[in-house]
Figure 1 (cartoon, rainbow, N blue to C red):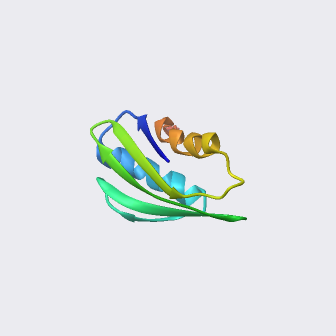
Figure 2: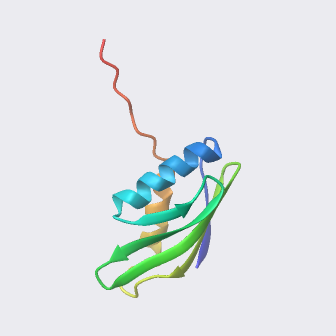
Length: 91
């Protein structure tokens, strides 16, 4: 399974957002702000794949995913890269 997601920001910002997404799903990742791999555990297996960040595009290659996890759900997980955290400033 392969898909692309456009995001705003630099590859470093994209990497930090991607790392946050994978960690929030109790996953692990190796690699840097250009390319790497990840693993996310599920009840009936695990999601394994690799990523490639360039300019404003995230390429995701899924090599293994649990049968009971719909493809659309996997894509939605990675689409969170476009959400930015809001920082509240106290004066």
